[in-house]
Image 1 (tube, one colour):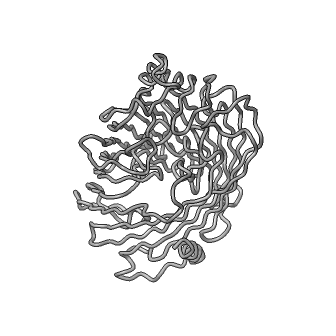
Image 2 (cartoon, one colour):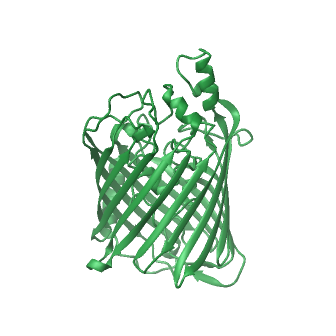
Image 3 (spheres, one colour):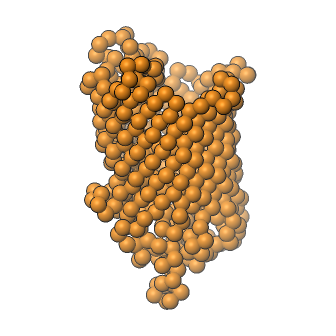
Length: 447
């Protein structure tokens, strides 16, 4: 099946741009594929000590891959069904350990997972029109209609990714065409519900009006931190997600989008303070967050996501995120506060209209309890140097994405990470990457 998936994706990439002729049945289908390969590495960096979850200071160079087959069908004018299959493999530097803002979002965080293909999305979408006025929209793997009512209610149910709908940003949300770092592509303090691969089962309700929208998501939580298995009992474990979206033109003819976000997670989570107290009372040899897990603990947080068109070619964005930091990091990454800013520029200025250049900076931090836990030798699911000389983890990332041919793109990416794992005693680390991205679609022409 893996070989067939590779052959299909490469074939679709070659066929990119060769849309089938419009027809009643092809208008209701979506079939597309993508293949993303990232080769990434870093030279030797300074580190006087390392722990079980440290990024290795020795030079390394590794390659990851993600192959995805997207399929969708319009069952009626208001009902869609999506079924996506994915395969991920390769490795990330340090087996994806030792950095909270890890430099490759494609990397599966648990290296023991199977390399076999898996179902990424199995999702129904029901749209309820609330106005007769229509607006054109672009068809894609998660949106099959070519026009939608200005006012509408969208109901989505099944397997999906929480960040398919929440904290989305047109400048910094696509690791296959834009930035690669976890803390740049998503709000790092948003501990959004997901299994190890980033997918989840749940229900998302979204109301859209002309200049604003509101969405709510009820999602399952993993049984253990960064776990592949989800807890189906929503009475004891679940995640509520809330997001407003405001669309205005504060600058003449330039769109501004503001998205405030909130989330509340309920799960079998541990307490940093309890783990520290148990260690200080000699109940455990080191602080152990796992030993303090208790069903029904709550973790909550807030975020803000802003994007601004500056010119026809230049855009900027920013994110802010915070969570309570007392309950263990459970699903995304070990970040309790984050501030991000970045921009991208299209290549029309140098006669490469399909190219793009981007730069972003991010500063991540953790709570007092979280940093004390790591300093005393505790381990999270990503971090644990055995000691900690705390400093905020600061990252700058830049990329240049070039279109080589129909559906074939290459990118050069460079990141510098200060205080990896919040440790002033280690780093800085310079991480370089080359990305090859192939994509193509059949039956994508809409009426």
